Structure formats: C-alpha cells, structure tokens
Length: 135
Image (cartoon, rainbow, N blue to C red; front, side):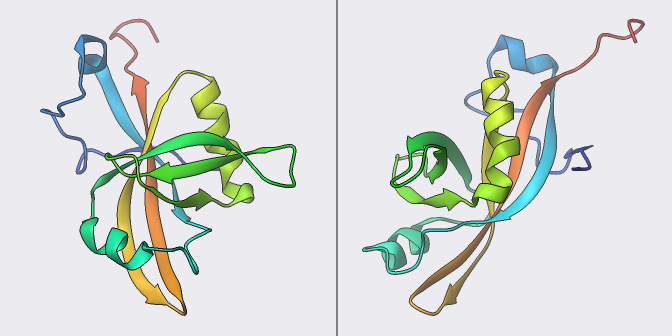
C-alpha cells in the first residue's frame, strides 16, 4: 500500500504545461523509485550530467523484450531515454496512466554506481481537487 500526500513544496503555480483544467488540481507524491537499465548504457554519463535535481521526467509505456508486460520507460523533456521503472514499482504508475492521470517524475538523486548511475526519481500525479461542499 502506498501513502499519498500532497507535495505543496514542489508544486509549481506557473508550470508551462498547466492548462485550465489543471488549475484546480493538486500534485500528489506517489513514491520514490530507483531506476533500472542505467548500467552500461551508452552515453549515460553525458545524459545524467545534463539532468538537474528536480528536473521533470516523463513516463512512457514500451514493449519489453522477452516479456508480455510493458515497461515504463523514463525520458527527459527532450525525449532521451534514461532507464525504466522496475516491475515491482511499475504497476502503480501503469494504473495511474491508464486512469488518465498526469503522472510524471522529478529527479531526486543521481550518483555513480559501478558502470552506471543510481538514479532515484520521485513519482507525482495530478489529482483533481474535490469542490468544497461536495465531499
């Protein structure tokens, strides 16, 4: 079970991608995730050096080799693939995406580890606020 809470500290009132619908939404922190698929990845050092702490990252479903399940890939705003969410953490993100929620990540930590990097991201979703007096 995941504990949900509103992340007011990292919520940005002037996000470029806010639309009228999202003005009434809250940002909810879902989980922290250490990414997979970052070891021995060509160009990972340069890519990680360009990504800053709290940069926004995006989730995409991709077909996984040798598996019937999709992977949840993590990409930068420019579309560069960093890695993917481990299967045990991907289910929540997958369900939120299927439910039409805006799910995204923010880089929390990056540190060298062996031939790659340990990359930890926070996973966030936008949830509609319940109008006052209806709940």
